[in-house]
Amino acid sequence: MSAFTKGTEGGVKSQGDLLFEAQQRQQRGFKRNVGVSWGIFFLIIIYFFSGQSFLGIKTIELNTDFIVKNIGFIALGLPQTLLVSVLAITLAMTLALLAALGRLSTIPPIYALSTFYVSLIRGTPLYLQIFFFFLALPQLGIVLTGLFAGVLALGLNYGAYMSEIFRAGLASVGKGQREAAIALGMTPIQTMRRVVLPQALRFAIPPVGNEFIAMTKDSALVSATGFVHEVMWRATRVGRAQFNNLEALIMAALFYWLMTLLLTYVQSIIEARLSKGDR
Amino acid sequence: MLPIVKISNLDKYFGRLHVLNNINLEVGEREVVCIIGRSGSGKSTLLRCINFLEDPSHGSIEVDGVRVAVGGKGKQQRQLIHDVRLKTGMVFQEFNLFPHMSVLENVIEGPVTVKGMDRKHAVELAEQHLDSVGLLFKKDEYPNRLSGGQKQRVAIARALTMEPRVMLFDEPTSALDPELIGEVLNVMKKVAKDGMTMLVVTHEMGFAREVADRVIVMADGELVEDNKPEQIFNAPKDPRTEALIVRYRTGGG
Picture 1 (cartoon, each protein chain N blue to C red):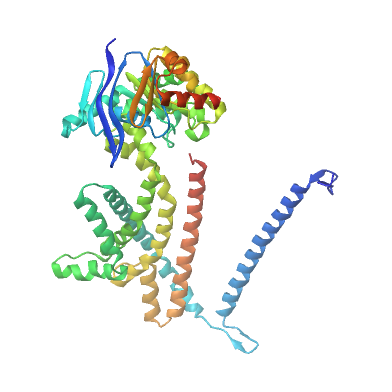
Picture 2 (picture 1 turned 90 degrees about the horizontal axis):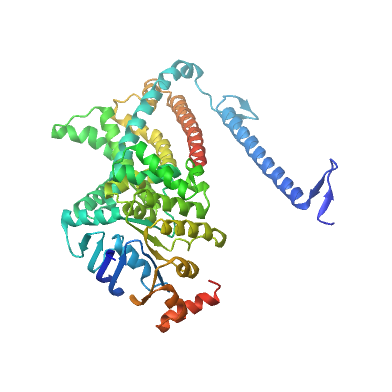
């Protein structure tokens, strides 16, 4: 009898129900408090940049005229930023998959090429790689546009890091799957194409999403070439010209932040859909 | 009876470990042969050598007139091995259904991709075999929605749809919950009754006794006894056979 308590609505609730409800209330309360705290931090930051004086503490005053005048100019960099990122992630995925497959090869030069590529790229800075394609190659008579050099550098760089993701994806497909395919009479290429890759790619989609989000931010480095008019390039250009770097960079930061929030949201939807079809 | 499977002088080493020691075995058409033995006796390795999931170290394998001698190289050898694989269907302990394909897609995958059969014909054939294992109504489900017993029945249908001459079963019920073993064994009995040549590595002594034409006992990489089930279970000659069946008798098998 002690395990049951009379509920307030007259229904009988077990102790388990009551504990579960208490736990739920606690979780809801935690989420609400986190949300409220976020709001407060946000308000503090806004106040911090409001230019108001309070209790003798002077806050930072932003040039609102400058912001209103230039926000559109910086926003126009968003499509460029996304273009660079989309092209580069496409290149990166291709290279990463090839590098991961190379790591499975039993042919020494192919295995070596794959490890050599990953080692070289991971051993040098991305910033250097961008300049290499844009500034060093012209010395050899190869002139790439800023966009092309940037996409190439970002793609090569991310491809090297992402090869690990694809390697893990390929490793996640059990030996039994390959054996079942071989026993049916599939060739190694058929086994890879029909059985291993579809499963490996499904495994790789969520982490590739993370890499894409990271890349939208690293694409800012491409502005260093001076010829890709993405968000960062536009922010530094107007900021320097009128010595309003503070306002310009804050705007750019907000744009990047919003973009990552949006992409993270899209990614969570894709992930939820994938896990629903998890089979 | 003309042998449809002929294994001659087969040896297999894993590194320095000698897991199969000079195996000679013939299986006649429509014969059901159960291979029993303790784990580590080499029975699964023997089965997996037949379709070259394991590379034998020495000897030869012949299935339905296609003879593959170990040591051959190049395109011709690959073609022979491919031919042997087309003549053998395999059922695994862990089912190994393709999780990204529906039941029907799993079953037509072999005929369409490997044999180049047109899809319509493959679907007809697949549905026929799914029906015979009693799972046609699950054809659009994905494997993760099936019970272990259902998965294994689909795996059997997948192998049968390739229309092999010989079916190899590698401990087909060992990964199943006890209450699901019966449905798989019943399907296997049906396959045997339909005249399929079968090699079954199993711990199911009841099945071996009831369905097998011959029971082979393996120990330490050797065939220690090869006889009719009545002989094996009633009058075992080798002490290792006796130890094996006594163990299963007391285990309730």
